[in-house]
Each structure stands twice: as C-alpha cells, then as structure tokens.
Amino acid sequence: MTSRALVIGAGGFLGGHLLKRLSASNVSAVGTARQPHSDNILAADITDKLRLVEIFKQTTPEVIFHVASLTPAAAPKATLDDYLRVNVAGTLNVLEAAREVAPQARIVLVTSSAMFGYAEAADGVIHETSALNPVNPYGVSKATQHLIGYQYAVQYKLDIVRVCPFNLIGYGLPSGLVASDFARQIVAIERGEQEPIIRVGDLSAKRDFLDVQDAVRALIDLAAHGKSGGSYNLASAQAVPISAVLDMLVHLSTRLMQVEPFPNAAKNAVPIQIGSYAKLNAITGWQPHIALQQSLVDVLAYWRTVKVEETV
Image (tube, rainbow, N blue to C red; front, side):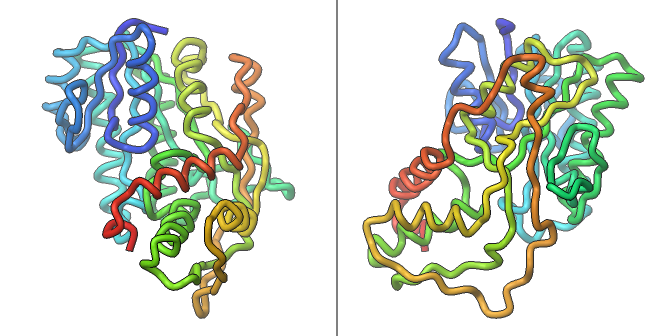
C-alpha cells in the first residue's frame, strides 16, 4: 500500500472505517468531510473544486479514495438535480482536481450497486459487465459516475479503479438503511421508548449484504492491485431476504416483540440483487470473511450506544 492516502468522504460510514484502517497501518492517511470530527480530517465539500485543489496540493496523495456521496439514506427527499450536483458534478471536481494537481495518483472511485437496478440474469447475479438499469435518481447518478470514471481513465489516462459495493453493513451503519432502521426500533423497544412492535415495509426483496470491514480490505487491495480503468464488484455473492435480516436482529434482542407491516407498503422496485466478486477474487484473492450474523450483532451494538433521543 502506498505511503500517502487521501479519503474523500471520511465523514461517512465507509469512508470513516477506511480512514481508520489506513491510519492504523503504515500509511500517512488524511480524510475530508463537510464537518470534520478529528485532527486528520480536513473540511471540504466535493462541490467545491477550488477547495479540492487546495487539499490535493497540501496532502500530495499517491492514492485517492473517492467515497463521498449523497445517498437516499442521508437525504430521503433529494431530487435527481441534487444527486447530479453532488455525485456527478462532485466526481468531476475530484477528477479535474486530480488532473491538475495529482495526475499520477491512483484514484479508487466508489460507486454503488444501485447503478445496476434490475438484474438481467434470472438468478439475479450481477457481474461487472451486466447492464446498467438504474431505477431511481440515486442509481442514475452512480451509473453516470461509473461511466465518467471510465472516460477519464481512457481519455485523460488517469489511473482510476472503479469499485461497486453492494449493501454494506456493520458497526456505525446510519439510519435510513434497512438493517439500521430495524436495529434502531429494536433498541427503542429495549429502552421502553417504543411499544414492542417493529413497523416494516416490504420484506420480500433479497439483497447481497457485505460487512464494511470486508469492503475496506477490498478497497485497499484494489488500490494496490486493481487494473487501471477496470471495474470491480464488492459483494458476498449471497442473496438474503430482508425478512431473514429482521428475524436475525429480533433474535439478538433482549425483548419479545411483534412485526407489523405498514399499511399498503410499496413493493421493492428491485426484487433481487446478488453481486459476483469473482473478478476481484481473481486479481487479489479477496473473499468475504465476516458472517452476516456478526455484522448484525455490530449494527445492533452500535445503536445501543446511541442516545435515546436519537433513536425515536
């Protein structure tokens, strides 16, 4: 692994874990965030190119992890314009700043499985060559980000590796994501702040869940070994029903509770997604190590540390 790394988006779930892992190794790692919370994180917004240029000059990174993103979990009312302004224009700012200041740096550009949307294969398995079929504005922005990354690698010869994580979970998982929202309700019930009923939406969809610590390992491996211009899935290659995630979390609780569906809950637009990590495995030997059960233990443990008023 290179000696100087910059994590753009270190204030987020994935970026925070990545910066912590890099800082614990023999890497000089610095992060950026809109609201810094530690000494090794600098204030920056990816919509501000001049600030990015300034930070690139200050840190002279050899590898840049671009994990900053506007997400539906963080901004449930965001519009397509919002996603394009942050995720697309923000990515252009990162890449243009790199062209100007750090053209030799390796750039690890993180997208999302939302760019694939519907799986073409009957078994729901998605490969790096699968068609991009986004079904929501966020997915559209990540598909565009993915394509821009390829274009800048080909046209401008930037050393870009594109990485597509599926559903990341683990300690610190923010609200707005399904496993976290279940855990938040369970903790509120345990504390007596909510009646012993978990309210849920559609539980029939199947998703590929990957622990954030496994994802961090993969990002570091790809920074060292990924092919420039290439794209790699980060996935577990297992489809887990949302209902099974809920069952596991409920069984980890200290209280008895019931499940109550929201009236007229909408069906999930994408019934199944499974990612293949064969390409990543072939180039780095990477494979998932952390079981879903352990990831859910960590999600629940995190919410048990959050203040009561933040869970209700």
